[in-house]
Length: 114
Ligand code: AMP
Image (cartoon, rainbow, N blue to C red; front, side):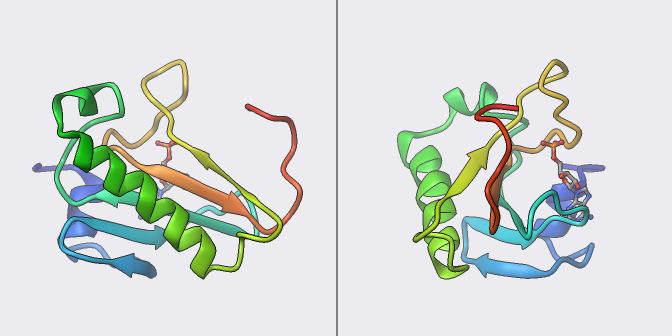
């Protein structure tokens, strides 16, 4: 999608520090990390958020979640644990309107939700 930051990252038009990539998904390090490990997992196809992703296949969503778990493991987070977050819309303060799952870990995380 034109003028979508994460579409440009997925296309390699804007550089990112990649953690994982295949034909369908890309995982890259967040530019403003909120934890010692903070990686974003995105589908390469433009879908604005998880609500809109209801229009996609079960496999599409499963792939995103499975990749997040796989990358978390590869980054050494499996033993102590990690958090996956996907913000959706204004109240959740979603700032980039391209579906992404945050992987957060590497230290005990505050709270349970926010
Ligand atoms: P959200 O607020 O859930 O939409 O998350 C968007 C995330 O994208 C934030 O954590 C930003 O720090 C991150 N971000 C924005 N621009 C970039 C970029 N060019 N490379 C990597 N991460 C980015």
